[in-house]
Each structure stands twice: as structure tokens, then as C-alpha cells.
Amino acid sequence: MNQKELEKIIQTVQKNIRCPHCGKRYAFENIHLKSVSGSVYFLQLECGSHIPLLASVAVNGLKIEKISSSGAISTNEVISAYQIISKAKTLKEIFS
Image 1 (cartoon, rainbow, N blue to C red):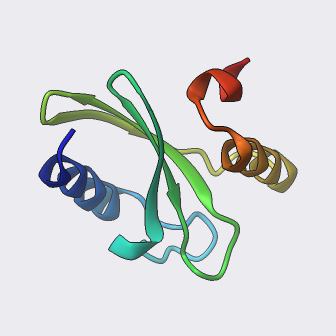
Image 2 (spheres, rainbow, N blue to C red):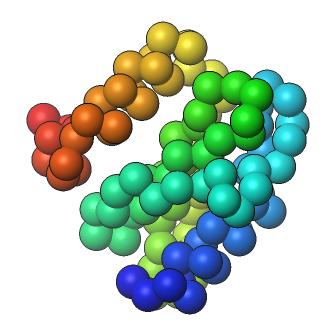
């Protein structure tokens, strides 16, 4: 993945995902790549007012196939996932 591809992914996320609490769009500088597994990119999105959101983006070449995020999880689940991802050095550590 090069810088241009990552920028396209982030721009697509900006257009399609808003904070589930306040509806605010995520600023480019508040979208952080946390990990990559094959063609799936894990991003942390921060609106500045609420707990960060974790989103996964499936990419096939330069075509973004799927963006998923869920506002239906509990606050504790988000905090737990954030703590695991923040401490992990590899995806294997996250999913093991």
C-alpha cells in the first residue's frame, strides 16, 4: 500500500462514516490506520468528543468493497477493543 492508496481509503471513510453519537464527520487527521490483515484495513476514528470508533475496510486493489462499523456495541466493548488494539504489535496478538 502506498500513501495515495491510504489517502483514498481515508477519504472514502470520511464520506461514509459519521460519529454514531453526534453525527460529526471525522477529520482526515483523526482517522488512524491501526493494522492491516491482507486486504482488510483497521482504522481508528476520533470525532474529538466521544470514544473512538473502530472501522474495518475491505479493499480489492484500489476498489473499496466494504466499510463496516457498528454503533450497536456497548461502551465497555469499545474500550476493551481499543485497549487490546493499542497494546498489540501484530494482528495475531489481537485475534488470539
